[in-house]
Amino acid sequence: MTIFRTFTLISTGLTYLIIFIGGMVRVSGAGMGCPDWPKCFGRWIPPTNISQIPDYIDPAKFNIVLAWIEYFNRLFGALVGLSIMVTLFLGMKYYFNRPHIRWPLIVAFILTLFQGWLGSVLVDTILNPITITLHLFFALIILILLVYVSQQAYYIDNSRAENNSKYPSNMRSIFCAIAIVLFAEIILGTEIRGGLEMIRKDNPMVESQFLIDMLGPFKYAHTILGILITVLTMISWYFLVKKSINPSSLMVQTSSAIVLLILVQIILGEMLVFLEFIPIIQLFHLWIASWILGLVSIQYVAWQRSTLNNE
Amino acid sequence: MNKFVYLVIFVSIVMGLGANWIINKAQNSIDIPIIKQVPEFSYLNHKGESYTNKNFNEKVTVLDFIFTSCTGPCPIMTFNMENLYKDFKGIEEVQFLSITVDPYVDTQDKLKMYAELIGVNDNRWQFLRSDIDDIKNLKRNGFMLYADNLPNGHSIKFILIDHRGNIRKYYDGTDKASQEILKKDIVYLVNEIKT
Image (cartoon, rainbow over all chains, first blue to last red; front, side):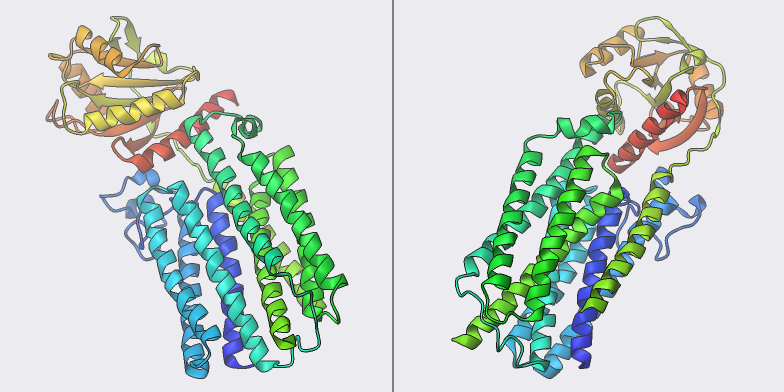
């Protein structure tokens, strides 16, 4: 494997990890663990003792556990940024003439810087809900860009990939529909999460079993879109696996993985509704959604490649 | 490919266990040690009724020092206290106290008007007054806050007091982010009464 391909995979893996870590910050309520940005309580290493808090910050805000959770997210974010920067550098060096490598990396790198800035806005606005959703949205965009570049890098090294596979040619609308509905579903999911938080903010003593009843129609929309995604991915599976000539093992396995993960998502989603809002389940519910998004993106690119080859 | 799937599942399980441990740690990270007991006092509230430190019993109290004609930080403090008062509507275990640091101007009638202006319509928020020297003494020695230059030099702190009359924590009463922490800490102390 070339060094460039290795770095595309490292960057993609790290981006998946940072989405997990960001979700962890969210569900553990550590978003304001550091009340300032980029430093934490005016220090590059978060304080371990309340006496280290500077005068201009209310010492009531100090919680060492939350400070470290939040700061770890920032450090890891910096690591992801560095990894994408190296990938961009290598991409420019070896594949400057390939726009499919160059542009996604440039955009991913700019978005990573933007994400850091958005992190500072989050702290300034005391976790404005729309900004939180945007923070996740752009993380998912970066993820898709990196998955795309990784796949393009793979095809450079394996130029015969998808050459012998022939998929139904009219799949574009299904892929577009899945992508749009998936994004909408994730945004709705974060709205549910944010909505519950707002209710708890205004009613701090409310018991968690009443929370879901106090939520508006979002929860139904989330379920309806969930059913839609299930149906769409089943259709997509049927065409890509059953109605294709010699589908690649990548296509078959991603198709099965998507169906399997959708099933897991339904189970986790129902657990959240019927049991309590267990934070670790919320975290995996979001993280698996990002996996599905990445897998669908891989399928689309593979399908497109095969279609172009066959033309 | 199968190897990759197993690796992903294995890594996910490890991450899940790790994340669960961290989330639990975060959820149990509220720690509000007892600072000291509030000394005895006996004041009058805005309705002319007596209010003593015995009224702290079985309630979680948020207390601040203000004066009604103040144009500095007090309006923000009162605005924040008002939000807390609204958020904890119907929760009898939580009460709010504002002690005037300008009792010459803030007569009982003035305090009553102030309470009505804010929309206080029950006993969950009371406005207290006493002799200025009593207040100075309580503020300085009871709450360990600056009390030299009253009324203007009053502190902007919100003080959280538990159901046994112990001072537990101080908050910047003008800081929005501190209010969210205070809210969580109030819930924590209310649960302490119940257990």
